[in-house]
Image (cartoon, rainbow, N blue to C red):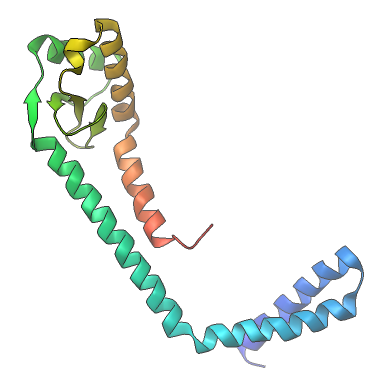
Length: 174
């Protein structure tokens, strides 16, 4: 028996034992496994190129979408952004020091973001919708800045990037 046959035989024996312990019908379980297992193995052997081709196609589509998302994140950093007031930039530095954020964090107002966002890992940036700093009480703005600084301190941007990469590769895995 070749290597594949041995593996299939051991799997059939192990699965047959599992099914046999649940309902006690050892003969039916083994015959069902032998028939269906071999059908599945034959199906995958015959359609390997199609299966791999579908996987590559889906991986490509998901990777293009991720690339567009990265491009959008880059775009909102520089397009239609405005320097926040000196008071809030200084206050952000104080809050960052309190939270022990070791990187310099920039604060910008953006006409493109619908809500506050932390963007970037190596050069972190907090984007606030235009007018939010002037329309909210100072304690609420500080709470928002602390929340975004927590994302930066934990490195959420990098973690999300790695998670997206893994989701692209292993999209078929539940």
